[in-house]
Image 1 (cartoon, rainbow over the protein chains, first blue to last red):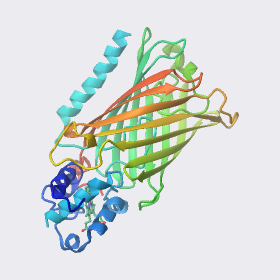
Image 2: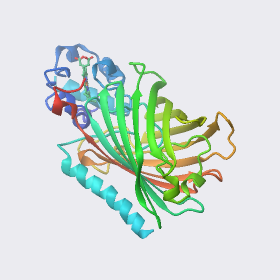
Image 3: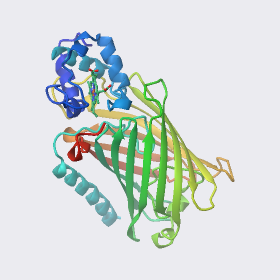
Image 4: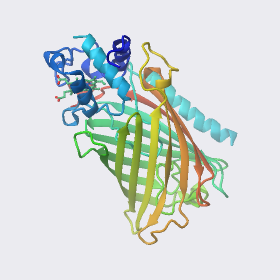
Length: 85
Length: 295
């Protein structure tokens, strides 16, 4: 799914719907507790690590769990995050 | 009847208009379209969701009614959601009245995702016997409780504490949720028990390439079932109500979500049918309007 040519564009829609409010339009983060998603950490993480983190979230630190999104949409998000690095 | 329907529908529509006018920008609610069952979904930290839930029914021996619950749901933390409900109803050939409020908190005790995710729910309820929103069914609740005249029903005060254990799993693209309910009138009544179970799934898994309103992933369908399980004085299924209700949710642009559910009573004590409609809007990151943003 993440390899699908249209996955980054679809992932951008999902990002706009669910992530933009915290991580901001250019994934620059809010300069506070919501980190930038164009980062060394994301570049170094594997696709599987990112998808796993999205499913888990980090409830204790304000990142919701996205296990309620269909799995295909989490992979589309991974493809989108990859495409903006 | 027509007047009653017009009253209910107009309050429903006005809520929608207010929500759209007040909307500060794009918002996205993504809850499941359950009306009674709770899933593990909590409000995102800093977001405020406003939702109206309408129930239309006619108890045997009573008049048609429409009950409206307005729900304000705020994400305090990633693991904690707090909620206020304001309830009212209008009964045909009778009156329109405010029937009380509820305050509830939902907390996820485990910070990581598991196959089954528990959520603890604690509620304080201060309503009158005229409350007809049927947001849960417990004990021996039945249609007879909804049939009396409002003047009589409103004399009964319900100061209740309610505890729910919510268990919820997201498997493949399904959400499966089970709720175990216990409710205690803070006067001298016994503990009452109830349940709600539900399963939902979006019509499509992957998102479309372009923004769209009618594409399949914007629709979530499923079914919920709920009912009473007696009380500590009579722990029996005798004279309890049970319902089965298909549910449909549609995520519209601008963060508006609508949901519908026709519910069907399964026992003699149950209402024959309950029609429900919901309208929700999510105000994003209102926590940030007051300070740097909720955690």
